Length: 389
Image (cartoon, rainbow, N blue to C red; front, top):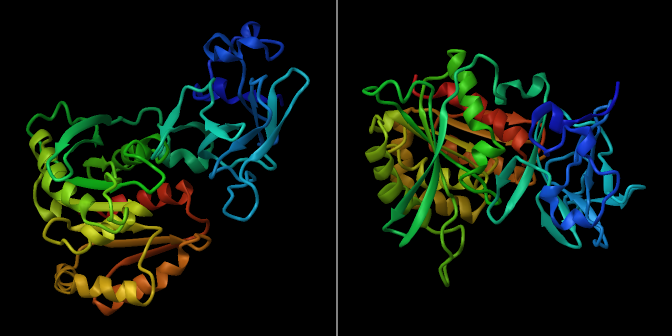
């Protein structure tokens, strides 16, 4: 079995596919990458993946990723990135130490200390700052978050709106289910789904593949058709205000984004027909602005985040005491999920203890793995079928 360029399999990595157009060597045209045609990502017969970059003036190049097994992330004390070496054609090249499981992965090339997306790529994911390339390794394990033949697909639109609370222009991605455009009078429940600290409002679709997850669940009859609003979770920095520990996101969500969504889309504007969920920073937003608001959100989902033991957990309860009583009385869906290898896993126990002490029933999902999209896609796939039943 020959090595196969992922671009030919998926159309996601590069403009290649015409063997005659591929240059034999990396040459001066590297400054005009659009003029070049080469396979930057190739799957080997044993499941490993090889990466190449034409950068003849570079002194050092690494493959950068926090999601590809075998690529150092820097969080384990090792220098981040997988070193690449110049091959006989002048390309910088490296192959993953082991095979990649089926799934979607973000990556970049670190050229002389600066991360850049794959210049031969065509599929990208916006992060909090900048962008990274995306490769998709096909296989049965990723079928639940991949587009499937014959499955009707919803639409993902980009919505801009003026935030009166933040004094700036904001953006959200919005998924509408298959048939939304044709069903002119039908109204739909809404899930507000928030990304993590390293991401943007683009991330839940570009790497989280939430739209495909929803399409597949709806087609299988496992989930209700719904609108999914994916807001930008970051807010402008303010002098003297902690970047994460403030009410700016919640104020914008309730006073600006939600009214705008209900004005533009055919929603069912009641608490039982709204839900909120998020991963990491987005899970913290859900803890702070979703869980204590049963008057606004029926179900909530919290992925890979929690409360720190001791004073932070006590302060959270003191701040939200009455609201948590209302949440307990509401008996709505509360879904909590963590990976055992997550570097934030120590937060799981005090958060579960808080929920127990407050009398809030919840579904707890503990998986293997860490702070990764592999888990977050799986958690969303389990959370969505619980909604709006």
